[in-house]
Length: 392
Image 1 (tube, one colour):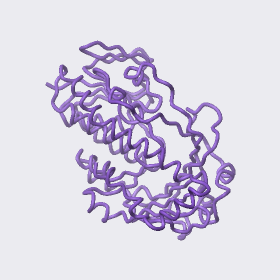
Image 2 (cartoon, one colour):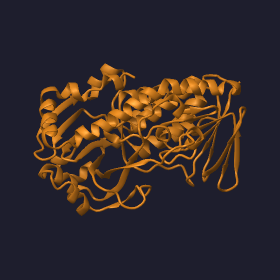
Image 3 (cartoon, helix red, strand yellow):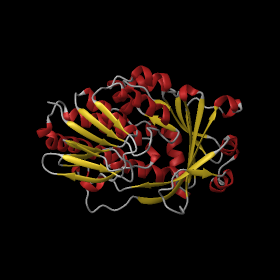
């Protein structure tokens, strides 16, 4: 018999979970606190580890239709624009890892998943469902929303993001996310609106002291997504993460970079800015599941964007959770969730740790920066490739 599963959160992780569980025959109540299923943000990089799972969910053709397929990953000096290292992507990565490397617009990926979920009769979608209470015992889980609705199921999956309410059901004495002191700016622009010299068909990365920038195509290559991350002291509530950002503030943060990067920044029509927060890497499987409640994505293991794997790990979690459940009935849910957590926590912890380490390397100053640049020039392709990650 199938289980009745409540999924809290209608973002990329929650939708991927609902789809993967529905394909296993389970019945899902998907709850989204916003009044509509929408997605904020701009670009997302999907390594072969993520695209392989999306292909397994039957999304290969629609994913290819919305994606850009970058030809290479190129790392440059933010000061001189000189190339430090390069790794071929495109067909080289697809051949090596049996799945493509894609860049997509976050809203496009969200819409693709939402369409696939809506096509599954086992899934019921509810919006405006801000969860305020969770009750459980050995046999069921019940959640209530702020507008006095309630849902009961055999299990609850928390895919409700960095400020997850469900997380407190798994980790009772939990500290809030920590502010990192890093600020991010993002912008998108039509490639045709840019001078030819600024158009981008691969993933371009610029490394500078206490900052880095990334640019890559999305939406089939028609748009360019640009993200700049600089070390700064955040002000105000760190939850106010998506605010209008000024070019002047960005230029002040990137004042140590050269003309090449500055020309790209000045060509962007508008910027949004937010503060980056994370949590320490996972320490045990108990931090991902407890009884009939499991966590995935940012609710379980938020990570800094320095490995471009936030969405990828959420998608991996979704597929692993569905595989652990299989055709399990209600009685087998706690054991299935325990298997899922045992399988996933160490990989997620490793990605969290590597992302933190990459931030230190990307933003290095002094002798560490010099050593990084020398190593990148000598071993760029080797250092940039991630077999342990992409084969997983």
